[in-house]
Structure formats: structure tokens, C-alpha cells
Amino acid sequence: MSDMSTILVIEDDKYISHFIDLSLSKEGYRVVIAETGDEGMFLFSSYHPSIVLLDLGLPDRDGVDILRELRTFTDVPILVVSARGQEAEKIAALDLGANDYVTKPFHMGELMARIRVAERAAAKTNAGTAEARFVCDWLTVDYEKHRVLVDGKEIHLTPIEYKTLLLLIANRGKVLTHNYIIRQIWGYEGGDSKSVRVFMASLRRKLEKDSTHPRFILTEVGVGYRFSDL
Ligand code: CA
Image 1: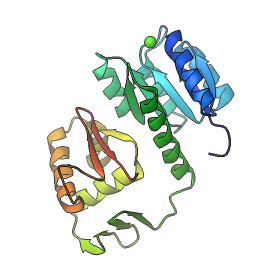
Image 2: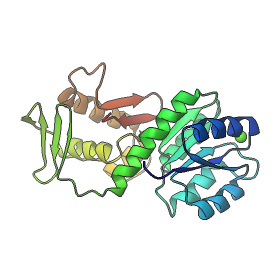
Image 3: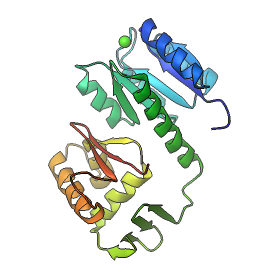
């Protein structure tokens, strides 16, 4: 990005926020730190950050609540920072539209990589959805003709497989939970993640060259899936 990106860090652990601040500032980001959820909401509206790092364990409010509130008015990428033992909160945050997560303790390199993925995803969203086709390596999706090609040869997908693929591509780089996928594809909650696994397995058989080392449809163990076009 040419402009300096502002990153809002909502984190009550001063050691962690200081460490993030130093590392991100060195990379040319402008860092704004909030130590409570309310302060985070206030700073969000003052600074309009391009990315939010959100700790789930905050002194005043539940991080999941903050996320829910942010998602009522913004699609800005939100990376959740969770501690071990906060699996349920982490999944809830991803269900509500968090882009990604890191688990404490994390390496700065890992956080930077995830920030870059989130930035790219945001840049693509801002560029609009006018693209007529998606092309990455051997995979081509022609949106107008509803055609999917592998190495230039058309393959057949069922309507649900096609819909699932479009959902994954539209959210590339982002972690999609089982519940999120169920809601988007079948339109109700509480569906079983087993059917999601079945559809993903069949999509992989059709799209991937090596299903055991997928190129596109990556598994986030215990959470869901992520489509990678990197
Ligand atoms: Ca905390």
C-alpha cells in the first residue's frame, strides 16, 4: 500500500501491545493502541484504521462483543488475538466475521504474514467485484458462463460445489468457519459440519492436483477452511 496503513491494536497486555507497536512501526505502519474495548471503539471512529488486531480477553468488554459491534458497520479486516483455552471465543469471533486469528504466544513474523494477507484481501474488495473471471495457477472460474476449468479443461461442479467455491474465492485469505459456510450455503445455522467436509473433499478431488497437500482449499484444523491464491 502506498499510504501508510493505520493498525488499531485493542489489547490490554502492555507488554504485547508495546512489542506489536515496535514491530509494526518499524515496518512503516502507524499503530494506535487501545487498552479497553470501549477505548477501541472510540479510537476506531477517530482513526478509521485499515486493520484491527483484537484481543479477545479485555478488561471491560468481551472481545466477541466488540467484533459483533464493529461488524454492524464495517468490513475492515479484523485479526483476532486469542489465548490458549479461548477456542470457543475464537470460533465465535470467526463465525461473526473476523478474518483470521493468531494464538498467543505468536511470532511476530506470523502476525506480519497474516496482516499482509488481510491487506491484500481488503485491497481486492475495494477494487470491486467487476472481474469476469478468477484465474490462479491451473484454476479458472468464469463467473459469467458459470464455468470452472482445470488446466484449461472444463470440469463439472454441482450447484452447491460451485456456490461453495465462489464463497471461498470471494473470501480468499480469510478463515471461514464451518458455521459460516453452512449459513452462507444452506442459509440456516446448526447444520452439521460433516456435510461441509464432504463438499470440501469433493471440491478438492475436482480442483486439487494433490488432495493431501491442497494448493487452494486449506484446512484450518478444528476451525474451518481458507482459500489461498498466494
Ligand atoms: Ca487480554
